[in-house]
Image 1 (tube, rainbow, N blue to C red):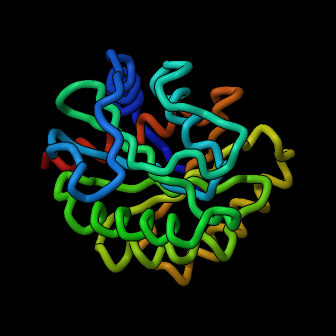
Image 2 (cartoon, one colour; image 1 turned 180 degrees about the vertical axis):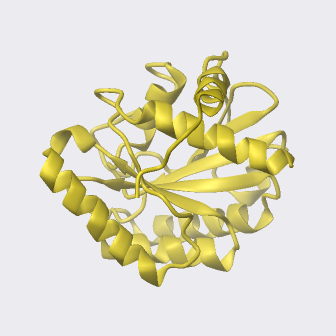
Length: 215
């Protein structure tokens, strides 16, 4: 189902991401996590799903988050801030088979520690490539988020690479698959970092989330 937003939420979302966004820290272990401040949202997803590109598009900064043609390059939790009220975390991509098992185990331990111990984490946005939909590699992430009692929502990326009819089918497929994951927040957001579509709605969704947290 499409998600509707008010003009106020759209404007608040625009202002949230119009600030001076900057890099804060890169954490490779639980001990290196930066101090909690404000509210955090995190972006997770399979390697090469477009997390860094989406973060750059949301913040209007071309090189805030590093992008790479090499899957699995992000191997740490990368923290960015736009001020005291909102902080964004770029999580390591998962599902890249060529990564060493020891490295995957380290990422997993880091992510589990982060999810369980980050009291200011308001939501994880799980990115899914609109061309491919949900994959088996997504399920462990849904399970970990559920076990940690962390709110999460699906965001389709690269929607510009899918024709309208195919995109409608993909949304329906993802919604049907999420029926087995009751912890998923309702409503699928559809974006394209390249064309900029859906960014207004995603910003507004984040603005709504922050407003709900203040109540």
